Length: 315
Image 1 (cartoon, rainbow, N blue to C red):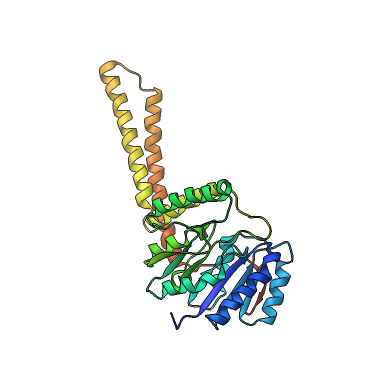
Image 2 (cartoon, rainbow, N blue to C red):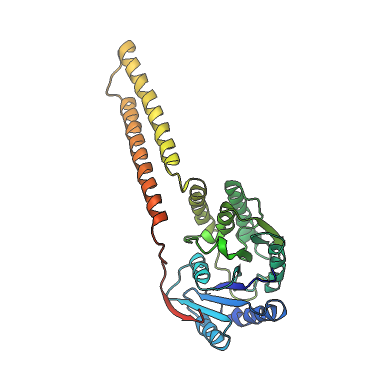
């Protein structure tokens, strides 16, 4: 990767105490390994002094890009903004809370140099509370790995390196930053992982809790649909419709046989259940056709950014 240009993207939300220290560590890595390395800070609507500190850094350092949102949009959108406003052909993402170690960046780059397209950090010795952070993370990682089929240990680690071509055309939303590696793998990227240093949180408190696990599971359902059926949604809706129709037809056949041979009643709850399932099957087929049309419109339409900026420096 000797010809690589590197952009490091850092989403920031209320991290004023760690910004200067993080910036100094990134500059040290830049001086030692990557003289052209671009540092991209995205202020995700911070309420503290983070924005002012980052603006001052960017004004003094032309290799630092500063992007500020007008409100808090979340980490996924901040990463998307960083991708849209960076120049490097290798994109590295890292947290702003100093728990990720910037000195692991050369290690990620070494793995890219071996022919991989995405390198995921693995916080094997994680310095977090077990019940609040580590256990929910392990459950989420197991679910993501099982459903996506990508066998890595730590989807939630922000410290990752990507070749640009696998990120620049993605539209990110929700909690999708957790699934970037899965999206890249789906698009043909060769993925590996490497153990990285994880440090105790030095300032402030974590902004993630066990409540986010439920949101991750909901987004995981969406990811599974997108990865497997995004270009063929009729397979999902049609399959549900066919199953509902078969069950409804079987129920109504039973009602008909009972009426003929056992003198049963037509207007029984079973009859209405069968008719409801048949009607549901028609709705599913229609939804599948509509989804197919929307998918085709999506691929033919121009993608628009869904955030507004209030400031940009050196972008």
